[in-house]
Length: 198
Image (cartoon, rainbow, N blue to C red; front, side, top):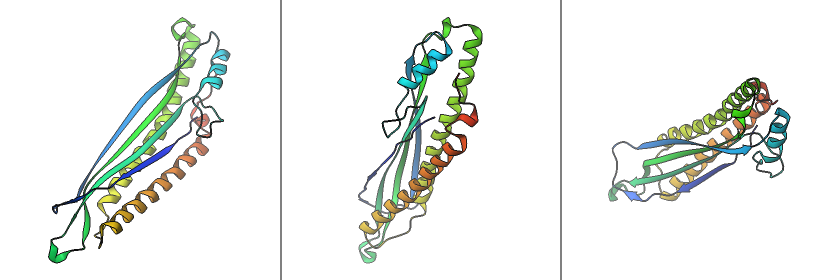
């Protein structure tokens, strides 16, 4: 029950002294946000989510929950001494994954009867499970980019190195976009994981 927007940024590094061992740093952050819904009955809540839930990237479809993520990277390279000029390699890099997960929050939850509270809590747990699945896929994409950068070879110019980095990252992002689509298809946007309410 979500729509994912994938963004990425490429920030190019500068020439540094040669490093003995190229290395990267991967960070992943999840930010949880809520939108308030009001209602006295389970049907009221369903209507509220249908009209207030986060919009898909097409701006037409609403979901109960949504996960958006960005994948950004920066890197630096070094070049060999002048006598071996023209050999460029990555010396260090960072890969940052940031996920924003949006969930509904039932404002009158404490005023509801215990049975309705329990149904909401079960539904919320299943929605959280589904959306966290999207965040995990984003983090896998970040890990794949980080590992791929470690395997990028030496290139005869900084331009060729930059192009190799760009192409490798795009390849990984394309694969993980497809994996996200497959995840939603297999789970029917969470329905097969119990994300149905009421």
